[in-house]
View 1 (tube, rainbow, N blue to C red):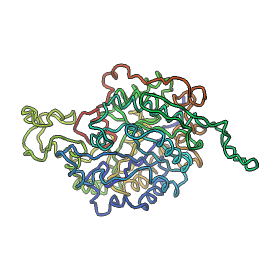
View 2: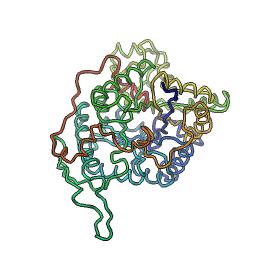
View 3: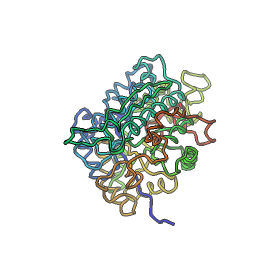
Amino acid sequence: MSTTKKQLHVNLFEMNTVSHIIHGLWVHPTNQRHRFNDLAYWTELAQLLEYGTFDGVFLADVIGAYDGFRDGPETALREGLQIPSNDPLLVIPAMASVTKNLGFGATFSTTYEPPFSFARRASTLDHLTKGRFAWNIVTSYLPNAARNFGREGEVPHDERYVIADEYLDVLYKLWEGSWDDDAVVQDREHRIYTDPAKVRYINHVGPHFKVAGPHLCEPSRQRTPVLYQATGSNAGKEFASRHAEAVFTGGLNANAVRANIADMRGRLVRHGRKPTDIKFISGAGIITGKTDAEVAKKLEKYRGLISVEGRLAHSMSRIDFTKYHRSERLSSIIERRDPGYDQIGPRFKPEQTIGEVLDQLGSINYGRYFVAGTPNVVADAIERWLDEDDLDGINLVQYHSFDTARDFIEYVVPELRRRGRFREAYRDGETLRERFFGSGHARLPDYHFGARYRDPAALLAPAQPLAFPGKAPEGTELSMHELREKTSAPALASRS
């Protein structure tokens, strides 16, 4: 029986915007968030994370505005809440140019842009990073995003995953099947760069996409980038069990987290994969310092800057709690059926006062995956997350750029290393997939769904649509409220 301790995977959770998750803190006098338009912000950050031997930087994204709160985008605009925001993909080459080992994960939606152009973009990034690119697969949920791409409303939830499954089918055909491994010969004598006999059309024809190919890029080191996904619904979990290699998950307590992970491992087996083929990652808030007094001072400063209105806007709340008297109880809102009363999710109790709700919204506590303390305290918590909850890693939420990362590197990393929980150094030249799954695993395993297209004959076979059998086992299906609470942002609504 192995006595090797599980080591922590850690990404810095980022977004190419002013205010990503912890709203209001961009006004901190030494916070660098306002520099997000400056390329130097991203290269400095990348060098810091590489110095700290982070797995990578994970770039979130949305393609619409949060305009549900107070019936418009005004609060989001005033708060800098993911608007203005820039394309996450475009900063990756700059960060890659100043690093050798840091990984880069970026969010891109399958719902509104065609797969052929994204396949080319992703392969380009995998080439430029030498196999350090990951894609966070999302289907987009903001109503404004749908309107931005000419739709009157959102594509229904499960239908988005049906579209995404075919989207992945097209991508696998392009990434894995269109070019043979030895198609590029670079034969100067005979003036042949690519052997035409080893490149093929994919001729995909499906309900949502018609793509001829061939792929325009030669094979990159990973071919298919590492596949990330955040999901809580039954359809999303089924999709992830077929495709994903890292899942951003969560739960209201340790038992819920373990149940979610166990459910996913069971689904993996049903899709012909191994139970260990997915790494499970949760968003985590960590505030640390040399002494308890130093930590308390940071906590007090951050709490004083948190924006409750920003959190309400991010959750697309239809209830403006700031308009009620602090002494009024939620039960009164529910009894009167005030607009948005049905949106009050499990995070709040009917007997709570508005004041208690506002104080809760103004908290920086991330629930189970929040710890404020000296390095020993933080390391103890991380070990519980790894051993008791069965997590593999965290997305480190930023309270301050770049102090959150600096503090983790200066204080927590040495303590984790002392305990055998964090790498001492990178393995030079490894791909991001190899960092997760070991040397020699630069590409999807042969039994992964996408690997079937390495056989040219499989390009001609009928597609195998993903089915969503039944409902998730009781207690294992996360609401969108719970998922965003643990992996993205505090939410009020139970939306899946």
